[in-house]
Length: 94
Image (cartoon, rainbow, N blue to C red):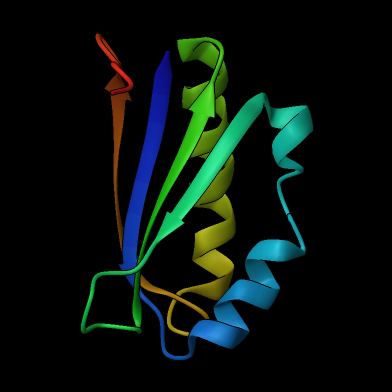
């Protein structure tokens, strides 16, 4: 299962969350099956997002759409996004 992981600074978490919730790339239509949002303890202005996909092609297509979008919002709701596509090889619930 591919996971597109994104992390970046946000000038204001509430403003970023509002933009995220507006869903500008239509996550469901883009193939996202689940997402998680994290903030490091002690840094409320940094986010890490995991977007899960059913296949690698959808993850790559969504990343391209996000990169295009980020060109229009860089510095306004987020700063310097870093990304990676991970391929989950094992997940065990204890």
